[in-house]
Image (cartoon, rainbow, N blue to C red; front, side, top):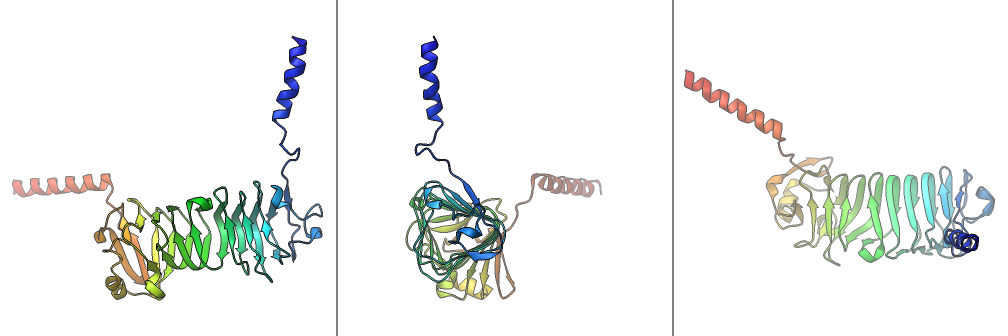
Length: 294
């Protein structure tokens, strides 16, 4: 029995050790204004090794990434903003987000001068608070990993392209245009705000048919067309051509559309709750009884 224990115990111990013998670490920005690649700006005096799975955490201050090359976030590594700001400036190097995460839970992330954020199926971008500013177009595809907005604000400089399904539950997504041109994308819209530029090419939406922005039955979301009018909405036919749908169907009567702040705000008309419906029915019955008694 003793010999068995001597053999099994080391095996159990080994199963809990990382394959490379190292554990991931979280390295916190020291605060203040400075360059990302300067070790002295980080607690511990070293730049986070996000390529090897470490997490760079920013809680305050203004961080500038002046690239000497691409910023690699791999092997479960992450760039996390809880406050302050992170901005790429002075070079067009890419942000390589393969099997890594960009998490904005506060503060401001600025893609800045970076030409591209490279993602794969294990990548993750999550915005729950704060602001995330993305340059150029932004594609959402199944092989690009997860893209989640539950709060905060996401600003996309040009087009948002939902090539695969995308669910919006909260926060604000602002883009010049939503384009369905590159794939059968559907936006499931349950909450939050989506804002497009109605004064842009194609009035803020390109595509349609099987591709749509679909308001769920009980959606609390609002769609805002900047630089737009009710006349233009009727001419473009977004409520009748399938671009905007309610519960997977074309139903213009399900929506409220009003002009507001130089644009048009579209929301779902709430369905009456069951108690209110019952009360209305009871009131009608009482009225009939009174009429009969008279």
